[in-house]
Image (cartoon, rainbow, N blue to C red; front, side, top):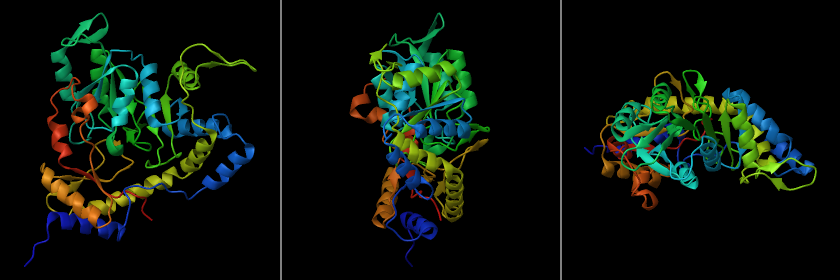
Length: 386
């Protein structure tokens, strides 16, 4: 009698949920007013960074997330770069960030001339581990006036970037307590988590600033695009000013009062976003339905489970994620090979950023959990169920 291997069981579970391949990991869904709004935008000739859809998109984003202000940006990495600048991150500062993340989150820190400092994650939320972080900062830092300094490098530790991994909210209450204790600013990288909530508050609205991404593979898309969320009026005004090359308003003159950035979202992209936002609730319902179908199938398989939304949280389930019960890189790769060979596009978690050449010598705490999860995690097809 031939026993069915775990990779074969996983592939069959995916097939039972979504049918036969080929199936991509994640695709955008255009089922509403996208064409109508884009045609209107084209007919108006306002297709660049000025136009009614930019303003409308920001208003609707603010309403949906509960943030007082939303500022649309050309992409998620640019939004995070600008948010770090707004938080006061300067050249040679250190910024804490998890090593298990997308490289764009870390590159944004480097764009500021700052130094990414890698911290570990925890298993339930896949986000920064607040207990390990507090213990680590207690060990390596000193207080100088109101600033926290790394005793070993002499650099100021200015901020912590908290990412909500695959749409699952991080432990914000605990992380906010750590940030308060050490006087470190929190910027939320909510690129993957529009529609996710931590204790009834939308991700990206709990820190000083939050950022979103609307890349083509996200829950809603503007083609390329991102946004900054904040409850602070002055920060919102600064974000708009800096993202429009710091141009001073004038009828005809080109006057710029500081170094700014050409980061504003084009009107034609915002038109697409307005239509996508109208159907966001339906998209989130389909995401949850897909998760429940996967959960049922994987509950029958020993050795692997699906990652669920954390306690007291509501996840958007952007990418459906399975996790081996025990770390086993060889087995993870066998499952990935079987899935992709069957036409089900799947991928591992990101390589830990501290293993990449540009960041291999950056400061880092020990990363036991991140290393373990790297050997366990697989993202499986996450398109909107019908």
